Amino acid sequence: MKRIFLTISILFFSLILFSQQKYDTDFTQTKVMKVSGKTTEKAGHLTFDGKDQLSMVYTQPDGEYFNIEGNQVKVNLDGKKADLNADKVKLVKLQRATLLNCLSGNWEQAAVDNNAEITTVEEDGFKTITLTAQGKVPRGGYASVVLTYRVSDDVLVKMVLEEAVGSINTYEMKF
Image (cartoon, rainbow, N blue to C red):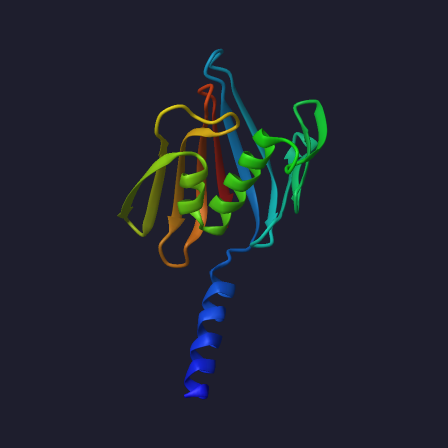
């Protein structure tokens, strides 16, 4: 009986361990500003440890970055630099949690955090999860999040984040 319990425990923890997605890939980002209609395009390299370490180093434009190291969020984007503690800034805490949860495949928690309804569509080898905010979008939250995962390995290949103000960021991973 102890062996069965031990075997089941090992299998359970193995599933948890391997369900954490890790990424080391190039990406592109397209941002469309709602008010002006202006579109900007960026590119870079994304590394994610499956937990709470995310590094997005931009090559276009060179020198920009967005990093999450535990609760610290460090950014140098569009000429603005910041080093923020997510525990102290509610807006940063929500954005940090949403990004990490979406990358790791924990979109259910991202939906809870953003007070969102979930819809799922699966076709042509891809699973698309759409999170749509219900009611007022929390400050720093997203009106909608669209996640596209490859069914074969549950890897996130595209993420579309619609901010509360209507601007849309689209990230595409280049595997």
